[in-house]
Length: 462
Image (tube, rainbow, N blue to C red; front, side, top):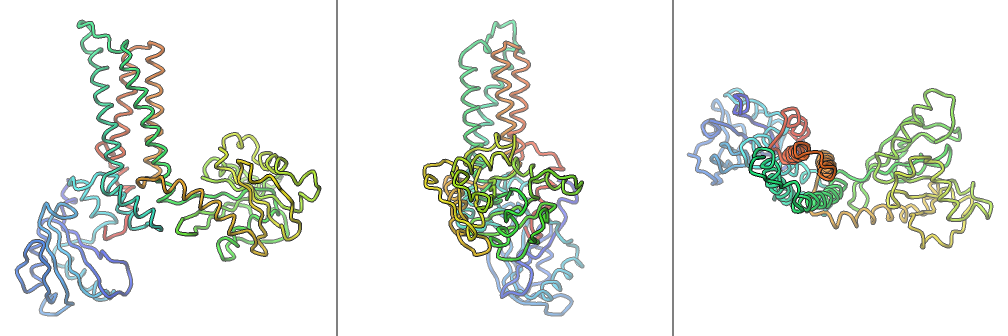
């Protein structure tokens, strides 16, 4: 740790605003000595004591003070918590007094960053702290708690240990060719690579479920102009978030609204209507809309019931064909789980689709203007997500998913090189890069810019 990493830092650890209790956290070398100047009693480690908080003869507040001696604290340093009243002025006066006596205000996430740097938490556990604070459902909180307890980290560490052992075997064949070690020709190396690939893929699926649980499900609303995408967004959001007019092409850019439904966070994305256009601005909006097909967790293609008035059009097969035609070539990249068809404007015409239940494609009939069918549509999204959430053993983030995806690709490359008899050096390099990527997940290998990006998203008092 650098000198700045060991500075005496302080911050308000409770939410901003008025409250019954306000906690100020102090961490670093000399935390006890500084806190001792504010209180009347000799501080004892891990013992709560009541005292007035006095500076320059003035009583700033009163409450409970607790000293956590290093290394048995959240950050691994000496930590003192002043638990007084939750008034903003009272807390600011205490902070100013602390800073006047040698402390400095903590950066966002600096307490958790120090816990990581001091070996109290690995990087996944540190991120789980923020996920636990931000959890919007019981399932998300439970999964974040599992990550904080090291469930995810242990699985990553187990894979890393197995990969390290395999690297030792492979590199022995390179370093000691005179010993006639033909490890790369042995079936066990091939089997170990295959087993690692399979287990990485399993962990990747779990991490993706954990990411959706903690960060929410992104639902993109796509379709032709004037099918009611913006009206549907407004109805689900419960506010006039999007402009709605009878003029086709009103929506020119992405409009994102975050909602929580039945404890499940959803990000709804309204998009420009899919059509041919000579308008340069609208063309950009349409291209951004099509990009959502690849980035969203669910793609809800909105059709207008009035376009299905003919009996031949009002069939499930035709609805699916229309939806996929609007998505174009990108439709092939969507799984059956990711595609959801929404037939809007059933107040004007309600098509009969008798075989919906037998289809793998999810389909909902709604009227955004009359608020009909919305609960069923949302239930289909939330229940589907809840099924994934129930299987999520821990929370994860996009960077974890990306890293595991890269590990899987590198292991596949290693298997390919082994099959092509390309030489042990290529197999060893792929395994080394995969091992390094696993290390980046938990922070055993972490560039400084990655750490800065992660901890800057934390609240000040964490």
